[in-house]
View 1 (spheres, rainbow over the protein chains, first blue to last red):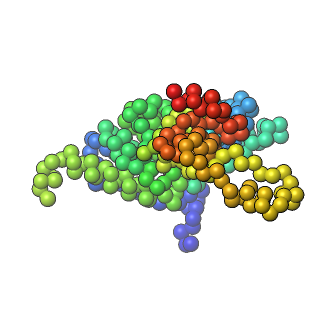
View 2: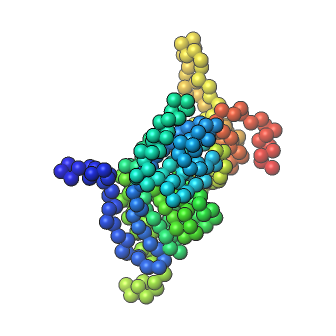
View 3: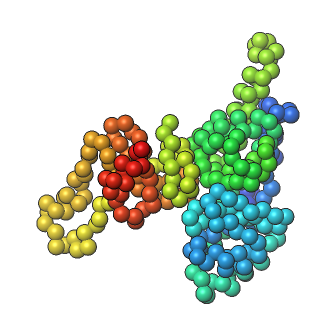
Length: 201
Length: 100
């Protein structure tokens, strides 16, 4: 590979430069999410307090809950599984923190940042477009909740950041598919809404 | 689409997030070498396949990533209840309670 899989420190992002043009408008916006450090943590729930100390931020204990701040966020995805996120510049600090508790507390901390791509979905149509492939009841999902679920055939981690603002994380090899799936679902919605375009065909 | 309550997530989630994983409460023999061929065959292949209440394993593969057990009626496809893996098989009384 002449380009190199990693251009500098950054992993290849298949959605780099992708623009949602088809249905762009006030109803729906799709954007490629910013890169950040993502770490998958597995630790016994009884030792969660030590992980919180190492992470330097609250880590929720209930599945589907998320804690988020300016520099850190933590998602509880399973009974003993968490996804930790922070700006790239904080990665070393976090891994060093967990290395310190490693001697007393067995755990696993895996850097999954390079495999993951984020997509931001916002606008009044965002829930409807996501529901084209995702079976979750998004209308009744609490703001600040998260879930690992499925979007059509692709596994995704979905976060509801605001009432009409979702962030979706998926693995890089699915990213292009997920982007096109959402674009297509968004386009259908636009055509239904805009009757003049349908009759004009 | 069926909704299945994951005992770990404590939420009803769509069936597409789950994967079926066979009959539950089948214990691997501690000393396979001591078994006769017929006993080993029974462990590997013979399943109860009942009409009615069935104890089975499910895997929340596109969710929390955990295996759990479920009691399902094979006639009505109704999930009577689900419970974490490793817990004992619910009694007939428990199942009747869950149905009502």
